[in-house]
Image (cartoon, rainbow, N blue to C red; front, side, top):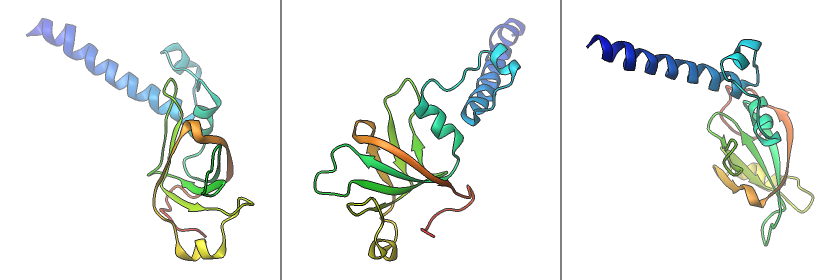
Length: 144
């Protein structure tokens, strides 16, 4: 029992705790020298860095092939949103989204109708993303 505890249980618990600590520091983008000494690393790509810097923000996502729909989506990236991290291919889920007109602006009609809910965008379809401004991370929705 002693060998199982010393050789398996304790190293496993230390590893899980250290992994959690490093993942949290990496996601915040706030690494100290000791994070690097323990194996932490900076964001691998600009995509990872951008989403690690914004807990909640308004974003305009321009699509590569808009087809019949809008050329851009105005959305909220917040606590109920998700962005993939390296080495996975880029994918984005916005917790709220509004369609835009040809100029990339949301019309009064679309704002009055409210968000249509969450919106998933495959990374290959994203041409560029503009972070319009940070939003209060505690707020949960609505445009305005």
